[in-house]
Every structure is written in C-alpha cells, then in structure tokens.
Length: 163
Image (tube, rainbow, N blue to C red; front, top):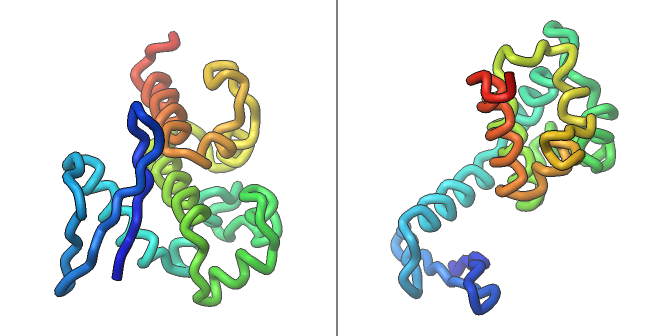
C-alpha cells in the first residue's frame, strides 16, 4: 500500500509518498525524523480511534461526571450530524480530517486538566478568546498549529505567564 503526506516547503506544497513493504513504512524520499514520527503516529492513531474513545471525549466535555455530553450536543460542537456521532460510537470510523480534530481535542483536554472545571470546559472551547486573536479554541483544532496555540495558552495560564 502507498500512503502520501503533504509537506509544506519554501517552494510550495510537496507530496511525499510512503510505501508499506513487509509491514514497514519506507519513505520514498528523505524526511525529517519529527515529520516521520508524526506521520506514523497519526496513521496508527487514526486507524485505532475507537467508539469508546469517542464516548470518552463526550464524558470529558460533559458538565455531569455521571453521564456523557449528548450525541446531539457533541455533534453540534464538532460541526457534524448527530447520526455521524452515533455511527462512530457503533463502530464506524471518523474520516481522517475529523479524526485528527478528535485527537487534537483529546490533547487539549489533557492539557486543560483541572484548570477548567468540567462544567465550563465546553464553554471554554466554544468562546472567543482575546489571547487567541479572538478565535474559538474548537475552531483552532482544525489544524495542528491551531491546537499548539491553544495548548501554549493553557500552559501559559498554568505557569502564571498571564498573571
């Protein structure tokens, strides 16, 4: 099987091909170690995003620790249909783009930890933040750079950088 990854270079975007041979991935041109690790990690995580992990995200966003956020509310939060969330929880796989967003959401929730009480997590992710150029964290999770900006903000708050 052949995989591809898009690389951003000074001359523009470039597609890098990866070949799977005997269970190992081989880059068809030299790539940076960090890029390779990210590609393999994302490929593996996308393949293993389970219904339980989707449900776990709903629990982590719920104001009530005893029940998950509703599928309807979670779907509105992500900008997908309710039936899509139900399909994921029944064993269907999210498409790669939304899987990456779900993975980024999980990383942001890990970074949030106890800084934001469970009842305010959803509001935190949906409100516009002046320290994020008045953008909403959930919208920034559409890209890796956006997720890093949200995590940097949380780390800054945790260390007292904005005090």
